[in-house]
Length: 86
Length: 86
Image (cartoon, chains in turn green, cyan):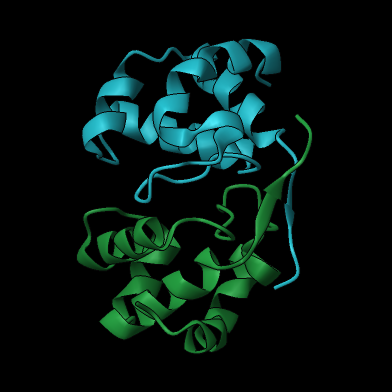
């Protein structure tokens, strides 16, 4: 499994779009907080391999190592998210 | 903008994978709760048009109308999500 602290450090580069603690501030950008590590890692790999495409993410993901991906997934997935009353 | 009540009704078909109130119970499946309506609608359209591919979602999205997409995006985006202490 990934290293959460290393992921937290790496995640500073994600904050511009995905916000602090993975709660996005830009409308078209997904929240990452509390997403499952399996899902997050799979999406980062998909962007890196061009299976999934997005202008920014396709570029960002190219620079990520396997360890970066596991660490980022560990970090964002472990942010506690609770759903309020509907 | 979408109709939240209509989206809530339509969302029953999403619960199997995305859970009640859009908090997924299966590891590889994303939470939808609190995601921006712009992002959710864009992803549903991407799945419908084959720009983004997933075994289940590519099938599910084919049956969604534009109104369904806007309503689902309205429903899931308006579920209140809060991030706990890191």
